[in-house]
Amino acid sequence: MTNFLVALCVFYQDIHKTMVKYLTEIKNYSYFSNSRCSFYLFLIGTLLFIGCGGANRSLVSAPKEVKPVEGVDYFLPKIDLNNWKVTLPIGKPSEIKPPAIVDYPNVEVLKEFMYNDSTDGSLVFYTHPGASTRNSSYSRTELREQMEPGSNQTNWTFAQGGRMKGTLAVADVSMEKNGKPSKVIIMQIHGRLTNEQRDLIGEDDNNAPPILKIYWDKGGRIRVKTKELKDVNVSETKMLKTGAWKDDKGHNFKTNVGNEKFTLEVIASEGRLEVILNDDESVVYENIHIQKWGVFENYFKAGNYLQSKSPDSFAKVKYYDLEISH
Image 1 (spheres, rainbow, N blue to C red):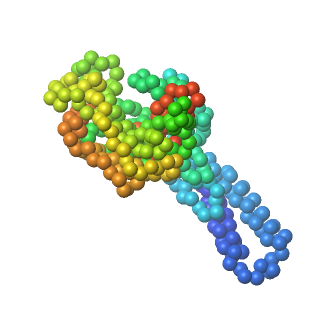
Image 2: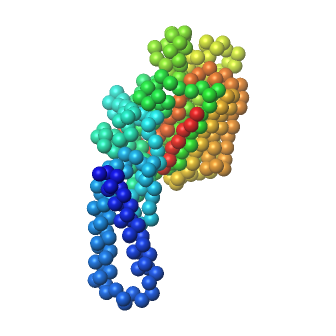
Image 3: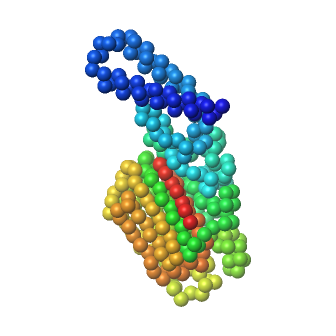
């Protein structure tokens, strides 16, 4: 039944496009009375509403199958969520994993924080100060890669490589008391200890530092931060401790993206990390610190990680497409 409704929707859209083109191109408009034109357009609109309305739920559940059609006023993001879970700024905090996340429009707890904007084909991530994860004091509505859907146990190393590319926009963000926009982390590569590494250094969880954080800062500047060893001669065992690492000085891209749409690509390979903005600007890390980082497992993160605890702060990040590969 659903397939029939989808086919009916497309059929009526084709009729609509043909009819509009015909009415536009015809030179002698007097052939149609105003009332007859109105009747035809009303009939087309009614058929579109009936045909597409019933198919809408199916289209939402499988966004990659939907292509924007000229003259139709809804568009859906091109994002496959089968290998992502999302963390929310509520609960302890709350998480939605595959397969539930794939049907996100129908998950009640997600409706405030993760939803479609069908006017521009984006998946919106909204967040405000609230619940935070164990190793952070900031809140997020952020995706976490799961190579094995529903599990955090399977991850990747730089030797295995990984690529993430997304098109996004920081559509709306609060102003801080200093008059500057709030800062948001929009992409990450986070490190992770294996169970054996965790036990070796006596930790009670698998947390390791993030090797990459990409910020939207100062109203539209994209800033990249990585990690460096405090002592490059430290042993491999001590290297596993979070305290062995510090932030680097950071890199600022020249382009100010503001609240407009932009593209970010992250490419990790053995001993090398590259971040590309708008297929135009690039920063490459190929140093001893990246080489040493090979000891860790990793996973990608993307979304809205608000770097503010001001009670009235918030951020809205839109993703139009997001893909990962290994």
